[in-house]
Length: 269
Ligand code: GLP
Image (tube, rainbow, N blue to C red; front, side, top):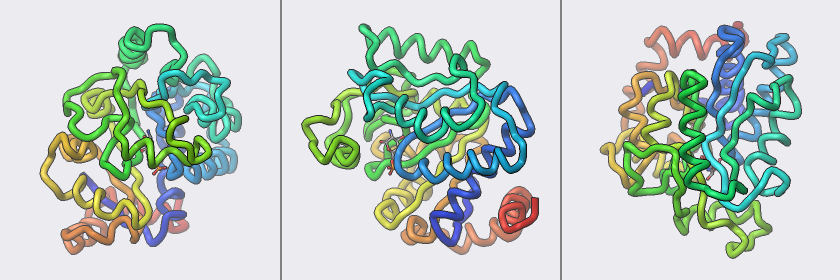
């Protein structure tokens, strides 16, 4: 894992947006893995702005979202398809047929999950997978104790996730669907690059477990320690429980890739 600690959440989002834009600039037919959640909202807003400012088109890009609630269709305001339309898809020139979110309204959710996995493979796999980290350590909707080798499938959401995401459902826990289709942890690990963004003091403890703790199914995000090309962007608040701070700062100052990313962010290109 390579790690950059940013002064604040806005700068972490800006850096993530820049890395996504660079990916599309460098490979116009990129396959992007996308995520949802509050952390991603600023990233998509900044990505739309930076892509416009730099004349980067999304016409050749294909996207695959991590997950979707079972039972919610594209027209449901709480669905992740709806979220993606609102925050990204409607603002860039992505071809609608190239944006993929699992169909939560599919009559057979298990078949939809298997078909989704096959669609990712047919697209040639994911070039860059954007990820958040749930307060309980989940990535996508791979809840604690999910197999680290899991594939795209139907899962039962953890109680902590229902509580965390109830805000999207008017704070009413009973309205949050309790099942979802999610890319598996094993599926996520096959992306050629991974970019996880974690911000806020509420994520400090789980970020430390995911980054520094043992790799274990209890913290699905820790599986990213096995990813050969994973960058984690944190803000100061989310980084506050890390014990390897000196080692991280050393790498931030001396690792050529990290130095280049940071200097591009601070006004260079
Ligand atoms: C949802 C998504 C996850 C995301 C998580 C974090 O549960 N399924 O992919 O990482 O939210 O969300 P937030 O950024 O709102 O903390």
